[in-house]
Length: 192
Ligand code: FES
Ligand code: FES
Image (cartoon, rainbow, N blue to C red):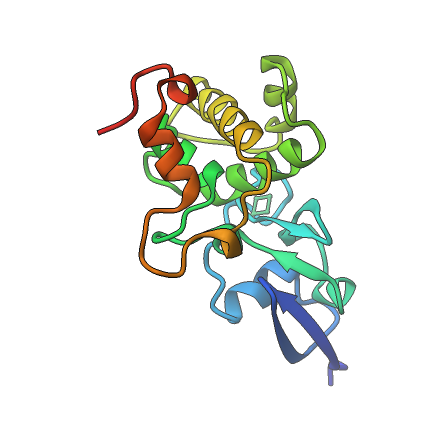
């Protein structure tokens, strides 16, 4: 019988105690916990659709065993923001038209978060290099790179943004107000 081991997966701030055999990937464990925003695209480390942050570092969760993530902080795309309180990166992807079917988007957003955390003002080449492990079959990489530039610009103007800093009273998140109110953020006179 395959040995199981109790481990603790801390996903988007919530701890889960699970008992898993040694060959369960982190991707499978996350999806079994309901974190289906981590996508199963290839299970071979080729597409980046399953990317998550593991203690802040981007990883393809299909290439890590769940046991290896015991006690680590795991962040998926859903842990960055919500529909009501989207992270500026998530909103930039929507605004730049960088989402079509959306299958790659979680991984793209995670890769972008990792990039902008270490480099708030990346060049086009740095963006394309950082996202080189993430494949998109439909949007095209021009809009995705544009979304990263847009997200970087917004985050530089709102360096303290976090999901928990968003308003609890149903008002627009601060970054959204700023974008709507200011011409200099989008260069387009705000958005409709
Ligand atoms: S599913 Fe993990 S890299 Fe493709
Ligand atoms: S938007 Fe469809 S795979 Fe990227």
